[in-house]
Image (cartoon, rainbow, N blue to C red; front, side, top):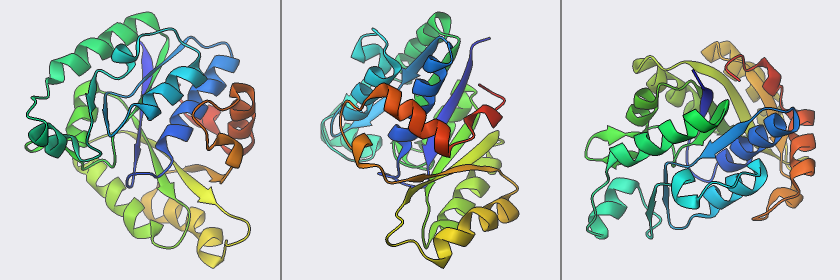
Length: 230
């Protein structure tokens, strides 16, 4: 069966796309036949285009990102405003096609793990349906203990396999005691390994970053080889 991993976060604009794309770039560089997917996007398709670029795949954007809404809102709200239905089978069909094509599929979620997709069907339910383990992306600074513990606890209510946590957005200029102690505290309180801390990198704050640089950046800061699901 094709391996894969679902990248979720403790919130939106948390760095999921860079982590998902970085994993894809690392796997690609190591010789793995890797595909990417952003099942649902709202506001724009920038994340899906980023993933397509760094994974260096020729898949149609509609396969990588089968559901797109113009409004940058929770999918359930965007669908209501745009008077559209979300057909979950579109996601499952696209995912199955990618599974057939690739050895590993990196899937990036929309927003956090409890974001509603339709009615009471949340991102966590989509993860369960796709039967993927999760990697959680969280902020590195003050407040992340609460957000990360809540995300881990919620995921465990649904018996999801949590393979690791990545902390993102470290700034050497502003880092303090919270940034220094959070990785150890999160591991101690959750029992989930923190596999790395990503500093902010301006070169990656672009739609089409240098793929070699991205892979090297990830290799320096993330122990992604510890993820046995890849």
